[in-house]
Length: 414
Image (tube, rainbow, N blue to C red; front, side):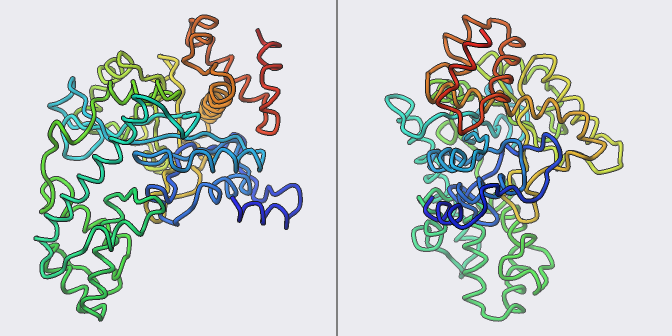
């Protein structure tokens, strides 16, 4: 935040730079508290979102809420509509035989909470959040032990080579891949020798131009050592991931909204999307997250685009807000989707309305305990559609600089 304060003191009052398409949003940006390909901090993301003219922006990190307070304060300072999410992997018992959205892992799904209102938690929610971090650390350490055996004589030390890559020690598989890539370059010296090592270990032709840490090499290391069939992979067991319903209970207790993550509609589990949505909503899910950028090819009508349109239609039929974003947890990903494309432009009003809902929930829950799933909201708006309309209107009406007056807008509408 100190750097952001310095920037604000040295620039004009209006910092909006590039003009974004009407309704452009990104509510799914990973920060360096989990893994951001550009090592962006929460404040940096808020600044870029404001500079590029986004209507709303949100961060999402794996297993932690470490960037929440910084990000929401940065958004307030920049008069930027913002929200915060958390992502993890969960076990879905109803789909234990089907791959969902974690490739090669039946029953395991990437899953989210969105609109998390505060970092400081209490009671069971604090214990659950700590368990997410602890379990992820345990998985990573055991993974490194197995991969070290495979990459011998090359090895890394988790404490020395991985943990320092993250501000609060919340490392991911992508950090581990980078540690291996950098250690190989150090051990073998020349790009040619390093590429020869990786070609032999990974069973592919790795060119010298991909070392030390080209995205293609990092993805190959991850695929051949950490994913199903890889030397370091083991099938998840009961201690590996929480149940989806337990994750949902945590998110609700912490004041957020449970959010089902959708990949692309091609897995056996996502081919049963109606059943998956029913199971998810029965355990508390109230929104859905999609990544549009990877689910269509501009100018091409194919199965990818058909699946994208289908899942959006399913969400709309259930009155589920649709959260969109580009992640930015791998090199080359866009900062914001191409909302002016023929494929996405029809959905921009839905995406923008959903962003306003999540932003309004964040403000009302954070300051007044009157979020989307609060007793007050459910009593006042038992219809999900009416609740969506109300929260969207609050989100449109209340700017971050006016949050202290949000109840004036609420009283006008009710």
